[in-house]
Image (cartoon, rainbow, N blue to C red; front, side, top):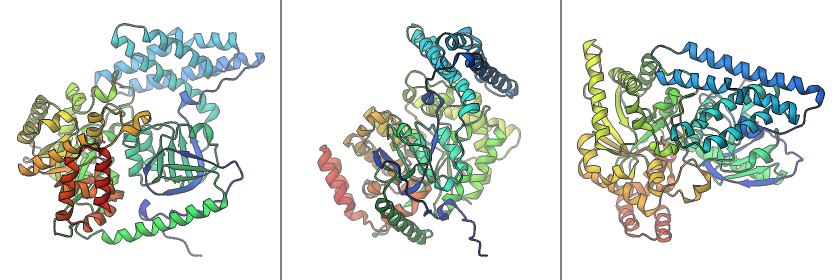
Length: 597
Ligand code: PEP
Ligand code: MG
């Protein structure tokens, strides 16, 4: 018997699977494609407890059993919270313990733990529904509170309710795991970046969600999984049933449910053709990315977890331009220790074998938060996020800096600070670094004394006052995702305004081009590490603006390299200049198309 060799990476895994068309009604949903390619497989529904709650009536004889089910769930969550609290390491920030205590208090408050039992008895409804009714009522009361701190505690109520719901649903309605992940397509209402990172351990064929924007962190992780994905489908979770046959066209953002035989055959054909193209690109792995007129371009990668470095090497990347270190902090109830972080950074530094590894300091806040420590505030994207959060948590920040510095002894590590807007943020970061160095010096722990420190240019204020940043920092990295979000006032996670999110908006292009031009003039290395760097439609434009360093998800490196190899900088520069001269979006688009034509 011949056994097929195990695929070495997910990239090598065969994409074509044998599926048979279904007989259910066929329909199509449209959303925003997040990650190119075509996936064909069967729907696997995933729940967010709050969105799953149904209402049903309980027979009189079953009421006490329903009350017991509710009480058991409350007891289970109480046990969980107490367990987490007891297991907290001494070094954990006091806030985490405080949050756990607060959640315990909320859970034990009669409004939450007893009132739903009354509702079950009087209204003969299911326990989940009774709890949701109670939550809605409490949230309404909280909305009327004047004190903003107390008002915001409603998020804690929601989190506690979510835990209780999950405990109840866990016993009754746990979704069946798909029999074969490689032909399962995850269908969810919403997936947080923390959920997405868990998918890295699986090999699903694709996934689709009702909400989310294309540059939300969930979508970015989806892209890094290199499987087709669509967000913003609005009602997929309601309309699709477990086990239905689906086609996910991640490029066009189209989900086809129960395709007929002809449509299925057409997509199978397209999928095979794409696979062939992907295989062909692999030949470029060790070819230097040089334009037709000889300009060398650095193509680096963005990674979320140390194991992603494998893909970076496979793609022939010239470095890690962005290591989103905050992903080490998600899906856990404690904080990673200094040693654990050190090992993670060292692993990447060593694996990249002397090539640069840019570790971005924690960018928590907005759509990424540590379990039980949601301090996102009323407007998460504008709140205590990234460097602001780190400077508010000096112990946590310095633990990370020590880990990064220690790892710098084992490779070429650089430090990148996210979300800078103020000079004092740089100064405070330098002070934290100086203190960290001193503690290492005292113990004779080696580190790279000339470690480069750079900053993300992703807030318009930074792009508009570059002088300060260039004087203080060793390199710049333009975060086009946030730069677009903050310039256009579009929440990147909100699909209701996703149609207004436009990195090609003249205002955004001016900020990008100006940053590249100024940095080049001052001889400060500058990269783009937002999603735009991996967008083939933007490669020539960025080259025309003078960019020579791109950092993107590994799956895009070879395709972008192919585009670089076909480009003459001398030809694209004048068109890029013309693009900057027009403020007419139509003309701008036509010129970008001409550039790519
Ligand atoms: C960006 O904002 O463009 C960026 C690269 O950072 P993140 O997507 O992690 O916010
Ligand atoms: Mg950013």
